[in-house]
Length: 244
Image (cartoon, rainbow, N blue to C red; front, side):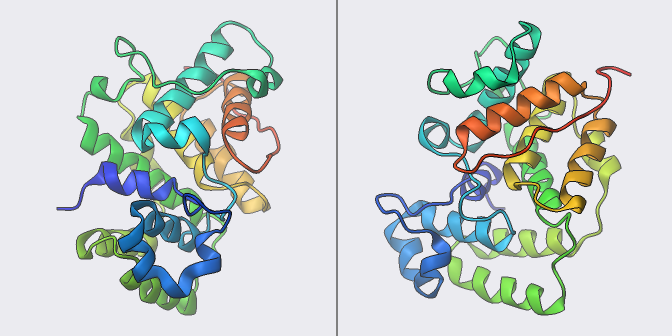
């Protein structure tokens, strides 16, 4: 079985560390990149899933690892929301820290276990990445060909291809959230996967926020927090009523 936490780390990597290049620029050298740098394969996966080379987290968020980074971003957004701050304040805040161990946002507090919740977050990212419906048969073949060069491992490769092929199951995704904190984290992971540039992507995120029963103000804080931790600015979003 592949390591879901490692795959989540891979999905959040976009730049080739130590360079200003993206994996898209070096796709022809994917195998060597995977050997030279552990994040290179992940960067390729992110590009293949449509997340774009400039949409992943950077800096301190990337250093934390995928599970802690998503938890930290979700926790920061929730804390700012609780304190009544303005979403715009997120850009002026210090480096991202992992969520405190005594909060439900910390990976160790996941009722279903870290690995299982990491798998849920991976599925959330893939669902968001394919929400614009651009993956046709030719694109699937290209994805399969490039994944085979990425060095992520056969089991992880098979899992990703199966998830890309699978129909969207929003019910299963929403039901996978065992706590209110995990609802915020699932939305945060989904937002990290895409910069909603199309009506379909924006509609998907709005639908997800509604199904997770996240309030508008909290969704706005997630949007602002993710934007502050990413390379590409994004538009604010709306949601629904917390707990409704």
